Image (tube, rainbow, N blue to C red; front, side):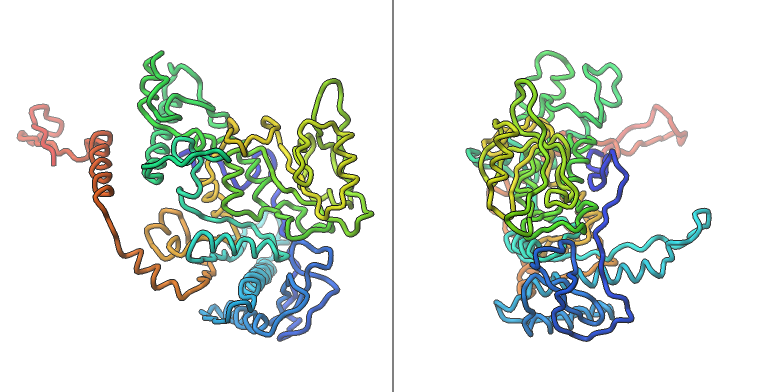
Length: 522
């Protein structure tokens, strides 16, 4: 299928794996709960003295604040002990005691400590020709659940304030993530389309997209060749499915089938590479460059997924921190030649803030600290950056594509990709997944999304809401409009999904294949 044709979490052109920079204590250094140690921090962003470290049960925990409050230390001790002994733990603490930071930092620190201990037992130094019957250990996945999407977004914001940047994913509904212009248009001037059942419309369009793809791939006489690595930007059924199909029998067939161009783009290698470079922490996360809360390194929320889906080439708020205002950023820009307008990246000097693996050669700078510089030349942009006193320096860049700030005014990139299925692809290899309660507690949703609870740590935040969530999951409320929609849906299903699997053939002669047999329908 389109959704499984390309692994969106790994770069297509490069086989280099990400290194998340583990820095954990060995089992021999047992300290129950010590003071903050300022010499060496723990996590992925070792800089600016923003982050500190304390120890619990021999595990080094990176901490985003100058001090650890007593309730936070107690929560960390209970969490680490429960995780080490594979036990459940129920914690209650008043509002304002820093539960989110204590939970996230403690669990992520244990996850890395546990993986390092397993990897040490695996003995990676075995000869290359030897047969290794034991698979390499995988990190325990953390599934962090809260009641609503907005509460989940708050937890992602809390993650950004910590020194940890794990592989992450955030799961949301089609209602939140769909970007199809006929269903959920995006942009500053987009208008809500009333009367749309987003879930049913999405399922119908993705199913038809799969059928159309198979039709192209199996039909040699098709009007146009189909390439999964470069799927068509536009087909007659991509809009409302009502027009554009008069010129050929092929187009007449396609116009009757509502399809989704954003789902179709998921098979292309360019989208896989862009997803990997935007949402998967790179191998320089643990480098010696400075960083802070705005250094995303793959940390993202629902809005980031939607923005990426509308224009995958546009990356917003790329942050570069420096230790003091006199330090240069180390950003190298290309000199404009001829009539070429715009500012393009040449590279970054080693050891400087820009050398954190975020920028690539030929990236076009579109904004500097919120100011539009898309039509300025390199000299003008260099002067603006040089005079900037902001820390961090925030850049919006375009990696290929149109090189414009198109997503805010409702214009889509021709290669706009579906955020809903991108989030599911990222969740497969994520170290921490954020989701609402019902995605984990409801077996139907859990199975549909492929959420596996084995070898996982499940955190239920605000757990007093679990009972209401389970009650709502087992209840239903249906009005007249919903019942009418159900009748229409069932009628359409009966018309379009006829199957000979519901037929039995009566063979009175008892001879298989006897043409005289009657056909009856069950």
